[in-house]
Length: 304
Image 1 (cartoon, helix red, strand yellow):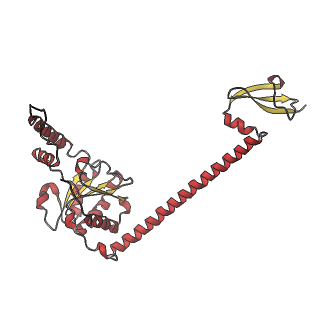
Image 2: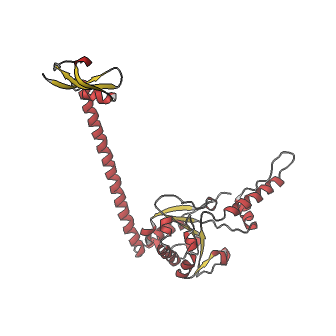
Image 3: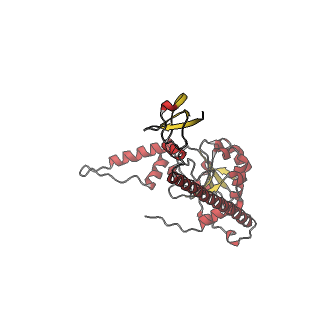
């Protein structure tokens, strides 16, 4: 007696699995009483059962079409992935060659920079890069060579602030901005400010309370409208009252894995241009010079 393993589908999404005795090859219906031995009921999706019925030519054709479509989509995805990868590699090589040429002075337009347009530069580094103080010191030495006068160093946890004594010692002609003041920086020196996420928060809250009190006092009883005191100049004045001076950078260079300001205080980014520089580990002097040159060569218009 010949025994076959059969799958029986009911009206739902389950099948009965068992052994059937004397099942004709062309039989389309099998009763449960034809099965010998244990019978198991298993939930199976409709899609799988449809693919199991290869006696229907339309189902077989749709199966082949689906497989060909999946294969085509896979090829398209792989092609796009290869194109993007090649573009990334080629652009990286081009940037490296260009940076090397700028460092050697082979591209003349980067030899002259109107550094006076860059009054304040901020550098943001991620946490991992902030632990490598030697790379930060090398970056500051490059900025000193270019002629930048005021630099704010930011990391979210204040790791660079803890290493400020070593940084001030290793960077030639560097001083703390808090000690000299913005208007008393010598031409041959670079003033450094160390910033973290917690800086100036209390001062901003106090300044906001001062502005709120000033607004409430200026409300006219007739129409209930007060003076507009929530402006940049009023905020700066309120910060000076509470003993804080917020230096707004003209240019923000971000060294990190993502294109973000990495938590740099938002109230300092009023008119700041942000440039992502990639990893601090692979920083290049030519790329730094190019970013500063591009900023100083742009005409900025401020509204009234």
